[in-house]
Length: 85
Image 1: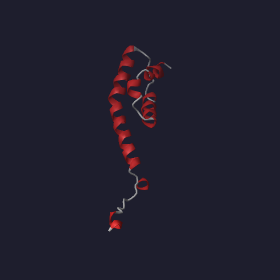
Image 2: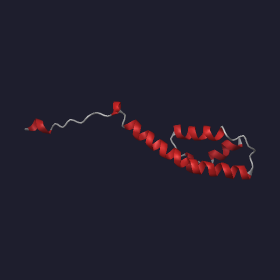
Image 3: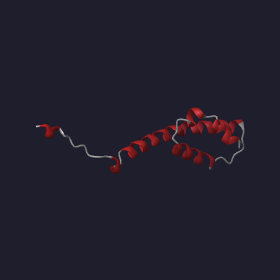
Image 4: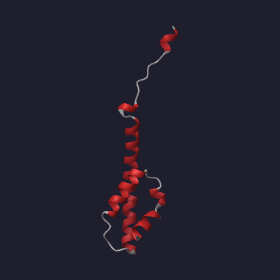
């Protein structure tokens, strides 16, 4: 419960993540937080989130570009400029 509250207060980081990236970050974090809630452990967790958030920012950007450029979403452009002459 305390760990969830701590992460919810990191909205400056988690609000910039897409829902899939945020879920992946939190799942990875909470699968490894079997430690007591102390100031030292909370500090370590916050440092971990800050360090790993950049990787999730990058991966969600790559995922977005890949989704937008999938073959099914891309239509070849055919110019109609020749039809005027």
